[in-house]
Amino acid sequence: MLTVPYTTQYLTEHFADGDYTTLAGYERKGGYRAARVALTQMSPADVIQLVKDSGLQGRGGAGFSTGMKWSFMPAGGDAPKYLVCNADESEPGSFKDRILLERGAHQMLEGILIAAWATGADKTFVYIRGEYAQPAVTLQRCIDEAYAAGYLGANVMRTGFRHDVVMQRGAGAYICGEETGLLESLEGKKGQPRKKPPFPAQYGAFGMPTTVNNVETFSHVPHIVANGAEWFRGFGTEKSPGTTIFGVSGHVARPGLYELPLGTRLDEIVFEHAGGVPGGRKVKGVIPGGMSMPILPAGQLDVPMANEHLRERKTMLGTGGVMVMDETTCMVRVACVITYFFRDESCGQCTQCREGTGWLNKITNRIERGAGSEEDLAILLDVAAKMEGQTICAFADAAAWPIQGLLRHFRGDFEEHVRQRKCPFSSSFEL
Amino acid sequence: MVISADARARIDAEIQKYPHKRGALLPALHIVQGEQGHVNTDAARAVAEIFEILPVEVMEVVSFYNMFFDSPQARHHVYVCTNLPCSLRGARGLLRELSQHLGVDESGDTADGRIHLGHEECLGACAYAPMLRIDDTYHEDLDVEKAKALLDALA
Image 1 (cartoon, chains in turn purple, red):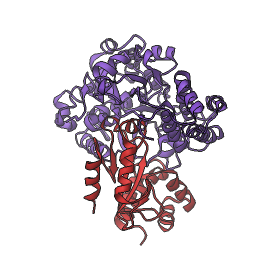
Image 2 (cartoon, one colour):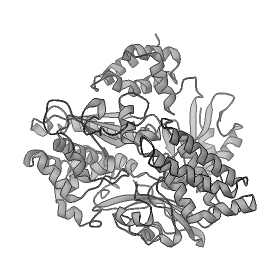
Image 3 (cartoon, one colour):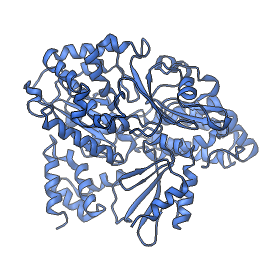
């Protein structure tokens, strides 16, 4: 059973049913019927068009059009083509892919199968973070069941289509969630991201055309094939259709997993679904989409959770990981935790990132212990500006944005530390 | 033999799944470490031979990833998640209490080699905070007493 509060729509509808994690249970709920429809009644081009029409955007953080991404794969040809399922969920505040793997692995595999048909891929590599040892056991069992039932292998559903799925476990490196870092890791190397272009659709896994999609992105696909693009557009906003699973954590009464339409207001998620801050305390700030995304102050929570609206507030949906901080929270301590993470996880390849993440952490620590100066605030912004957009991958941006967000909305917290020469938030969470 | 026949057979089975042999390097390292507890230079040489790469290329991979170790380890690895969602719900205090309980630093081994205690970045259990990982198993929605009992039960 799910052990945290949750709300469901189509993605998680059957997740409370333990039977759904078995092939027989999944088939009883209509599982693999959409894949059969795609493989027997639709051309690959039809499937790509359908997914384009649905408006599905990638749920791994960047929000790029999934149908568009699939269309970048070269059609035909003799060379192998690959799909990669990014199950390296490690964005702090995000835990939706874990439940999709633990409770809906067959749903994800069915989405992979449909995507494989659409893109002509021979093989899918599912790269799952090393720490997800238990979900990996479940996933491998589901893969084995799918092979035994003829949903995978040399002759998928007796259509003559061949598709194999290989699971690889990562080994504890956040950067492998970046798609080209993942590809390097998959090839048995250090997970250091590649320069783009060439993009993975031209030169991906093992040098072959490759499409990388997130666990949740694949999981939406069977529902789109089964119910159509118009049905899918019935959820969410015009520009951001469908649902997503918001993972809510931090200072709320009911931390949990809430599957809701994109465009649901952030204050509705925080106060109605997650029950607001316990103990009668007020919200101070909310990170809306995983730690890489800039924070919003309490006065700006009336925003629909869709990128077209969040961008107006200088933040993004990211992975939908909603982290709530109450009025006791010291935002300099928050900055210390965030900068430590990025310093620890920088792959070290680009100077701006390797050095910049270290300096952001040193300076925020200095301010927290009361040894900072007014000038340090300017240095933080200067370092962040010199990291943003200057490196091979978006990791440096992800490290710079949260600091910019904290200084945009909570500069006063930093200034008070400098003025009082100590942390003025004695009841804040422990660092 | 540095790598057992069983491990070698499992590594060979992994290699079959990849278009280039080296794709199976991380799976192979998981297999070797699962058997030996770490990947030392002798094991790295043996792995390098299988993959037809240099030992230094194997060690480069071992040292890049947090979950691979190049030296003997305590019997159990206990990691408290201290990323933001867990810290907001008391993870740092939990780690401090556990380090005092075991009489080790917040990153250190017990003298009897039973437990390595440390902290780890986000483990994807944010709604179940605070939490910790013991080897391959998550323990969630903890308080100090529950966590101490878990540690005390480790052989």
